[in-house]
Amino acid sequence: MTENKGLIKSNAVKLFIAIIILFIIVNLVPTKYYVMSPGIAQELSPIITVKGGHKGVTSGDFMLTAVASHRATLFDIIYISLKKPRGIEIESVEEQLPPGMDMDGYLEIMANLMEESKLHAQAVAFKKLGYRVKVEGKGAEIVEVLPEGSAGNVLKKGDIIVGIDGKEVSFATDAVKLIRKHNIGEEVKLKVLRGKEVMHFRVKTVELKNSPGKASIGVLITTRDLSYYFPKKVIFNTKNIVGPSAGAMFTLEIYNQLIPEDITKGRRIAGTGTISLDGHIGKIDGVTQKVMAAERAGADLFLSPAKNYSEAKKAARRIKVVKVNNIDEAIRYLKNN
Image (cartoon, rainbow, N blue to C red; front, side, top):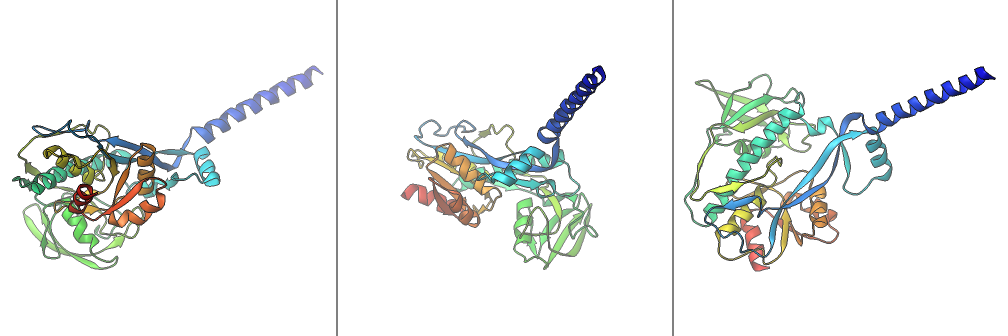
């Protein structure tokens, strides 16, 4: 009898330990997947200050939007797969990160793109109002050659792309735009500076796993020797927000602080989209989550890049989604409506 009691107690302890281990595996052990969900919708007035501007006279807000992500546990994967909650998705590490790159390296590149988007936003806003500005770069420097790309046999880390298809490349964004004009599988003509030697290459575009439908040559780039001059100082306090997708909203906030009137007209205006030096508002990822974040924050409008409009419109329940191709369209809409 005593032996049976001891056996039962021993089995109970083993079962308890097994349950604890299972709980840890299901709830705490990270997997090779990420959970993507609606993040913040952050007012930009506390984040951006134009020295000598008209900050504080606005009755509404411009708001950036972001996607929240965290490493998925097994519980996350099971729950999301079964329940399919709106706006919450599972993505593999391969979809999140370029091959061969860790999260620290990826975040460093995203931080650089954020800094470049701030400069572009200032340049566009000041130029719209007739100010003299200067933004210069010396090409697109390669910081990583991806193994799944097509450029590995010809390009090296440290090479500087200074021309594509006969057109000058001053900034990383120039290179991305010119490459993405091609269909996947077409050749691009590259003019590259390697040390002091100018070299010419032809490279076929490919589709990367984490950028479906977009032509690429499989390199990560940053602008070489980026320099600028602006007539007024603009202070940013973006803290841990990275990436280029807030560029359009940065531009609108800076523009609004530079003029005496208020184009928000008391509205809470959220949105997303990259900004290029010519004022074009570019496509971004995660627009469904960003629309949901804007709705949760009580925004009245959501400004969407034209190429994200269909998805943004589908995600909206209450908020009005406005399609904008460039910053001129955004300003015109806000002034006239």
